[in-house]
Length: 287
Image (cartoon, rainbow, N blue to C red; front, side):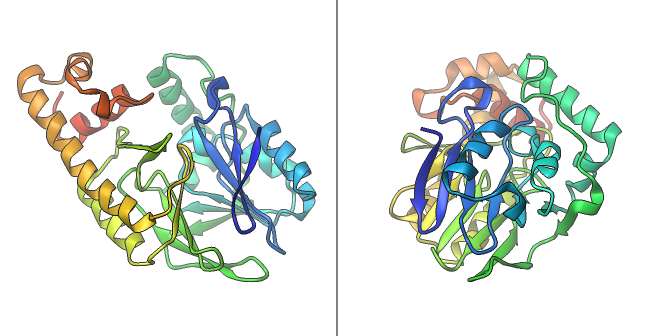
């Protein structure tokens, strides 16, 4: 099933990232002023269109699209979606706008993603987003959804162009990748190169916790469990432990990502473990 109920008027959409179910989620908020949180890749918009149709939301009625960060599994569909939802404003972090609106930067970003994934057009071929459709986010903004205001929160660490959003109606935190991955109830770190920053990510977790959310909404994958604060506490500990584990193994293997991955226990394995090891090594300046 593509679309499932998350809570309140929020719905989870499974984009089937790279053809894999439950790999990446975007969200639709069926508010008086409908909104979408993240776009998925450039090759998965049909999943989102199906969700809008199931919820009886016309594409022209969508007023807001929140691009939480510009990694192309989350943001690659922005340009495509802009054409499909002509009345939507795209909210993009000020540090990320150029990567979606400047053709040269977007092409460079795509090439780096394809190289890292080892697959051409890993998340499809993104289209340029018109800068006039963007509203830049730096944190502290509130966005009117018609029956409440979504609060946007600067959330660096996973990436310097990441923001989160708190919904006071449902008390849900759209933490997306700022609070890790929640894969079938198991929490995993997400620390991609080239800009993972442990200290910034820990500060972000503390900032999100201050909102006392009741539910975390992750990008990988879907809503979390019943205790959002406990999950944030857990991620704070897990992230620090993860960096320590990779650093200790690097003392033996240097920057050999495959060797380090081979030594990791099952509690650390995930679909992105090689990338996440590389991100920690980059942050520690180990090559």
